[in-house]
Length: 334
Image (cartoon, rainbow, N blue to C red; front, side, top):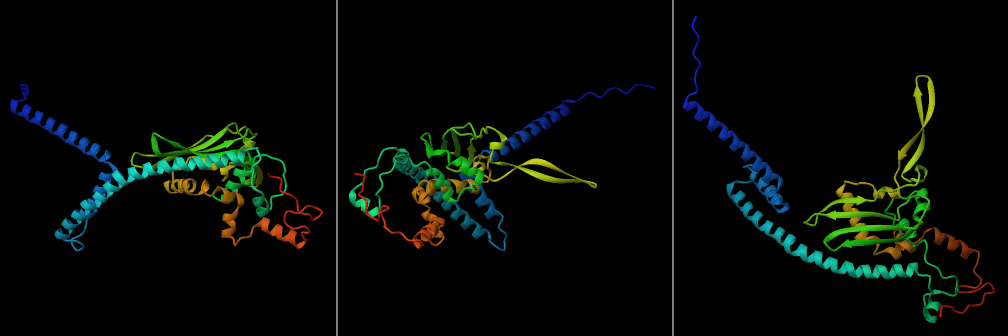
């Protein structure tokens, strides 16, 4: 039996194999290029693709080719509007907002200076009479200012345990970043306390280059012990195993003011937080301290009003600005 001679590759076969390899490489490169281009679309390009894909997918009974052509033309003009909004209006708006944010911050700093001052505030005798200011009293800062502002805003979930902690808040302020106009941080500055070691608890809101909110980063709270952590609650769980019943102590996460500093990925929720800080909390801080915002919503009466009415029912002999003898005191602010 003779051996079958080994078939040698011809030049034609070699050429075919080389061509096939080159085609495979080219197809692979094209796929990678398309994938890269798809990943690197700008927001404007994404808007354009979404619009044009929707027009392309219109059914014949909804739009013939003539209608599609017109819609594409409308799309081009629509994208011009987007470009003006993003490139011109957006830039000018950001610059204007930054300018006035600085002005607002000066006002907030003046308010904070008065709140923290231990000096006497001089007012006129007319104002003393008008507003019933008669007692010289002790000069000290408004220690519970931010505690009341935060509680009365009714924006945060606040437990009874939280109330004992937030009384240590000295100041709340907003910090802007000059290099990134849209980014900002909210600082809650605390006195030294028995609950955690942090002096400042912050939440930073970060935007992309197109001014879109992307994420918020909160401070990790360094609780001094588990018992001091207001976001954890010990619960007694009943467990049954067959006929046996026993109880086990477990820790569960609970809603708390300090949950605000935890990671949140819900952009709708974060956008609402931004609006609250920029357009509500700092702007209406005095109204919240006085709780007149809630009075408007609840018909103008709260617990203090009811207490006052109760006091009035028992009689007020001297009236406004009177001492125990019913005589009007002199204004001592001047």
